Length: 139
Image (cartoon, rainbow, N blue to C red; front, side, top):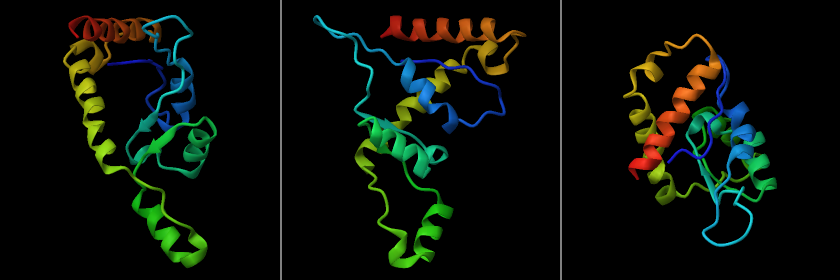
């Protein structure tokens, strides 16, 4: 289920917006207490694979489940023993990433979201939020 929505320009890198998305996450607790703001793990595709992203997640205490890009692997292997160890990838957790892709697929069923008919960002974001609310209500 969608937890946060950050709207950016089409040319914007996804990895650059990860901090904003993590800052917007608020998961209410069942009992008393403040909402959770830190996820247990971030499961992402290779577009988020960078040392900067991994360090930021580690500083926040969030486990990263992100496969390395092939050029990063080749660069590390060229360095030999100075290249360090490859980051651990929990393949069982990563297998659950298809849930995110399925949510995107459901959102794209809304023609206005898939083709972005809205001229203004605020109208488009409202449509995406409405789609997320419908997804939560169906659950």
